[in-house]
Length: 94
Image (cartoon, rainbow, N blue to C red; front, side, top):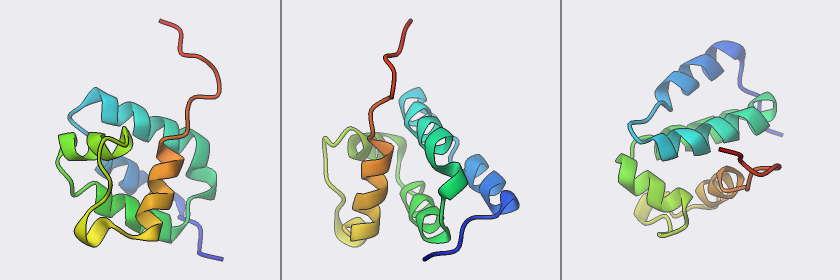
């Protein structure tokens, strides 16, 4: 089993994950709400790699409009994207 992320690393990761598109922030925030307590170092590294993408490219991956390509076409990236795409547990009310 992979090592869990410590509080300091998690804080830095959350800061690094702040995005320019609200849609990306919503996916990322929901991901952290569900998985931050069980986030592993490998998942954190994978998330960091995804944060290197431009906002629109990241959104395309999260919405499954595109699949990861080149060096991001790896099982860990696909698994993390699946976690990020999980629908909300309750309907969003506006």
